Image (cartoon, rainbow over all chains, first blue to last red):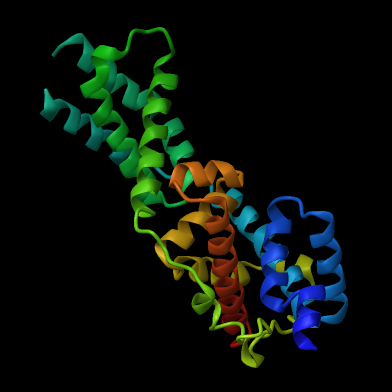
Length: 87
Length: 185
């Protein structure tokens, strides 16, 4: 019985894989329907999707917020010295 | 001192900042970004004869830098990863159902609150660094560099199916790590 359920409505392993796929690409119609049905019966996977989306958003935000240029004076000096050594 | 060298030292002064910003945007690691900028200028001295002035110095330097960035990711992801059901056995039983202790719990918190929470972001970054190299590269290039799936696959020479599995597996671990550390406090 469980096997048939999994074929029709996905296992949690497959459902979470489709959730990740959905966050990047489009799902086929049959994948979409099976995922919706699975989530309607599975709290854990519903939470997984919500949390996975949140993680994506935080990652995207933190990439922006950290983007501050530090003082590059030392780096410039170091590079210029090395360039002069080469010649 | 020849003219080429004078040019390059001037270029360091003029373009180092832009090159650094771009490198940092791509690798999100300050020290690594500095190394890449340095490598770019060192490579530029050797190739200076090929610079014809058709493009601006900045464009020319950027193309060298981009090559260095891709090369870095390629080297890092060089070792093939094997992912089979065994790799997922930590999270799912043989039937593919969540293992009881790994089932996502309710985080009982507003999404908007977590988005701006610096502690939450710190935990997430720690968890990201704890991932194995190739997973880390995939996640970083996907979410920090805003690349689309195909581009990452080309850069890293991995197949699309493998990429999904890596992202899936990495996300499971990332989510679990965040949950464990967030609720410890």
